[in-house]
Amino acid sequence: MRLDSLVGHLDELLRCKEIPDISDNGLQVEGDQEVEHVGTAVDASAHVVGKAIEAGCQFLIVHHGLFWGKAERVVGPHRARMVALLESNLSVYAAHLPLDLHPDLGNNALLLRILGLERESGFGSSGGMDIGFRGRFETPRERGDLVDTLGRELGGRVDIYPFGPELIRTMGIVSGSGGSFVAEAVELGLDALLVGEWTYASYHLAKDHGLNVLAAGHYATETVGVRALGDHLNDQWGLEHTFLPEPIEK
Image 1 (cartoon, helix red, strand yellow):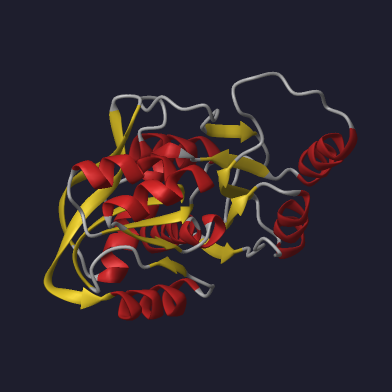
Image 2 (cartoon, rainbow, N blue to C red; image 1 turned 60 degrees about the horizontal axis):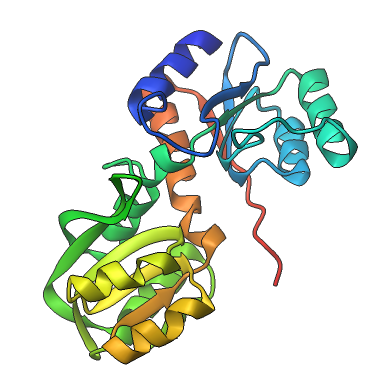
């Protein structure tokens, strides 16, 4: 597939030019003009770049890209990473908020689906748009059951702050750093909030208002979108897809 056709498809699918973001979404590094093998990852780290090159990828899609709206000196590890990309002709494409909020392939839509929630509306208002979703269970589910489901599907530890009802009917979901949305969940009267990670400042607010919080990991909650995007390209265009895991060590 031609590089420009692939980039055009992704730009349109993810609405990268329309959605305001601190990330410079879209094609960040131009490589081979023909693409047969796509790699996906959460972060454009040096280790991920090395894995993509070793796997023979020509195109790497990441959630957290190389450039975030400001000039960055090409020195040290950043220089080494750029040299590796340019010498290997590996393209890098970043999709931050556009992938979080995509209604079908986005992190939050997929987390909603994993848990079996019926989507009610957007959730996680930031900059005039909703990053996540609010959902409702047809039949209330136990907190422990939700933790087990997330741990099994995401492959990591899920921390539970059991400040609300044991049986959960309504939930807000924001992948990654979602702690700032505790107040919105409280205002809406939700039973629970699912985030990647949250902050100390939100702890007492959730506890005082009786809101359950599930923290499934910043990295883990953002693996689902890039993987789904790579599978979409495989299904639609026949491009080989390799997911490149690089979880954060704790």
